[in-house]
Length: 252
Image (cartoon, rainbow, N blue to C red; front, side, top):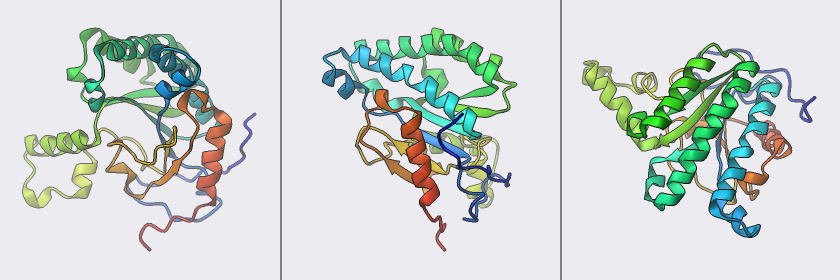
């Protein structure tokens, strides 16, 4: 059983259309995104290496995914590796890739069992071959999942996503007068995902760091001081409870 009761789940609506704030149907967000921040600070607080901090952060993903599935959330997007992260030390990057690759292989059978479909947001062509192979296996294995979509932002940049959407539109021969918001939205990495309702950032920082910047235009933002390895289902419930208390106006 979950500790949060925000049912009933919102009725299906057309993708791209803002949802009216007609409680109680809007109490549970359809799409939640998380900037998982604080692994390195958590490691320093516990006298551990950065690699051990990242490992603890990876381990914290599974309980949140399971909880989101149980609640009935349609889509969960997590920021795993940004294109800006390439500026970090090589040893840290190699550790991150090894941890994430191992997690993908380890968790795929359980994601299949839960009915979770995995999608990757980002420029996969820039990743090492071994990592691309692990991702391809996970995408194929979970393709039939229908309970929840798990978007893993890997080698991701919100600005690059918009650039890629424009490039795709140009490659497809769209004329300038045909290039509107709807045309771009249909070419974003998240085109098949419901509009973003809630964006959570852990670790005490209050910025979105180039994550889903198009999608976050009308999302509710929730910042908490909890470092990501300590962020658990109860902390997730607190974010959802705050979302349920807010009034969404969409410019009205």
